[in-house]
Image (cartoon, rainbow, N blue to C red; front, side, top):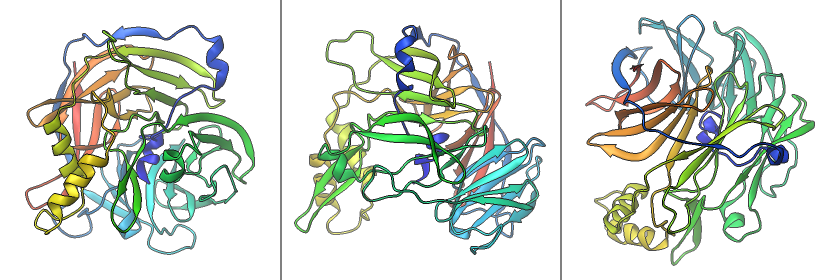
Length: 391
């Protein structure tokens, strides 16, 4: 459910700007013909063993003093490192009491207060040193027949962003076309609409002799909503496939205020990349969770290959992340050896340039000057790594 979460840092969401957008001028169309930025591997955080050793990092955030915080849902804890990479402490433990977690995920900041989204029990607010402040927890019936509305993202103005996931079967059957993001009070009262996420292209159906199951599309074309670590605004990104024959395709970025109104927007020209048959085979193999040594591996891959409604070209991007300084990072489907391209934009949505980062780096946090991500070493031990950005 993560980046339904970093959804709001990866908050994979959506389209709009509630129709205030109708009163705005058309988005400026820009091109990313800028000098390439440089990424240099910097400080590393973690340990081979002991208390600072990591295993299942879900999210990473940095405090104002440079300390690094990493959430680990499988161990129900937050691991804290000094700015020099050394281990400092662990926050929380498994439980349901104050300061305890079941499955901690997204990390955000409200001033100097650390907020931790626990997928099973709401949002915990604490100091950077682990002193418990409060917990936001509510369950309200929304548009979804299957899931209630609960607290997802603490917003900078004191309210909470919330949505109820829609089952893939409802989306594929056309019973649900949009995912509604609501602004709610900490008590669960509806205050406003933040955004709607157009779900087209988010799922596919895989039929087996036993049953039909729905899965996330490996090349989803649904909209994405992202939020920075300070939750002061939102960014909507549109990656729908253009009609055949469009010579200069674009993807859209829109900055929204916490009232759902559009602050600014831009249409980014990009070079379309054809999706080939071998590409589809490779993606199908990467998508299956079946062991390659299993007897049914080949048939499983073939079933996925034949079930996915493949677009004719790659979507413009796969991921959008936003920094507290307003920068927007967009992960493209463009590769150079073992590196993948990211487009980087200023807070005004002006193109700053592009940078290639290792494909093995799971980027968690971005800013204008650095990114933090998780890399595994040769023993498959994960480490948090900072890459410094210049240019």
